[in-house]
Length: 483
Image 1 (cartoon, rainbow, N blue to C red):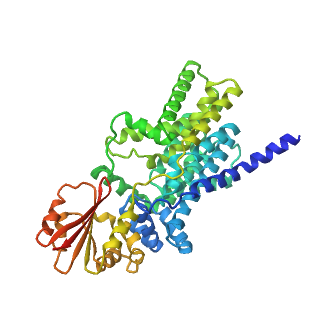
Image 2 (image 1 turned 120 degrees about the horizontal axis):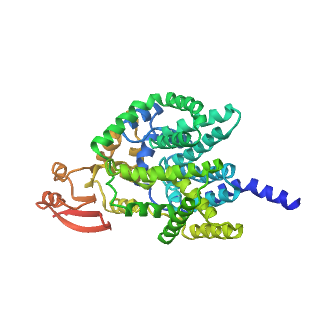
């Protein structure tokens, strides 16, 4: 009896341990990398009034939920790298807890512990826990939506509390990310195949979710049409190896990717050889649908509208961490062998964990060079122009936070120009900037160097190269001084 009570207490305390373990591991290197990539986009827009956030984000593939939450967060804690990253880190730390509770309720304690630990050790989760963007919130809401969905499906009596939470969480999910609609679509497929008797009652709940989303429906349609007509910033997949590389990002490192693939293939082969029709297996099929449909479906769609990217697939990451342990359980009849195999899986993920993921955006090095060499007679040219919020965040925090007129980027750009820092998209834009009032010019370019000699041609009559620094392969900072 004592052992049982002790075990019960350990199980009850495990979610708490899981949360604090994630907080410790994800807090360690939280600010090691510079605020970069798309983080300044979210931080900048979150500073506006809520109504302005909603209005401005209609022009982007970003529903407004995360920026609205971040808006209230930064009102309390400011926009330092630490404060803005703690919010997505907390969402990331709650995700393994949510997965544990979900798997414990619908699968087994063994599967729950394993899947939660796999998610905790996931390099993909660590990366997005260090990224002030929506993706850790997107992941958490995906798990919660599936949890309340399956609860509704298997509850014998209607529970209004569960209905409320399912509608709320699922509505927030699609306000967090447009691909949240995939989760609802996967739930519908599951109902259609395995629980048709629940289809009609559930359709009513989906209708309520749709009503909650009506204010944003036309924006979703407009963004979808733009993506189809104009394409996305991504490229089409490069054959079947793209599937492997995506699994690699899910599995931490190559050897483990291959091992997980072998487990999945052998489990599938065994399933086909020994078919079962037990209705209790339908929960397992939900995991298959949750992982396989978006993983393969988005891969195929990406040949027409590219979208096959790890952060867009993060909502099916929990399914992968459920599917592999479930496959191991299916392969071994012996409980001892199952425990050994699952333990090896968890240890392998832990050994492949990278607590300090690299964004490969060393903005601070560029900023250091600019500040060190800039004076009142220095012109700074940054190309391309989309680096404006990144450079403003690091060079002029006051300009970054200037949103008084409600116009997107206008005040920020104006104040940066007052400080002789200009952001351009084309080399020819530099022609009117280079005047006699400047004694030296700092040129920071990102990406291809093709046609950059045009800027140098503008400089040749009056300036000569002083130094050139290659920050990374496609980041170049050059300083020119008046002859």
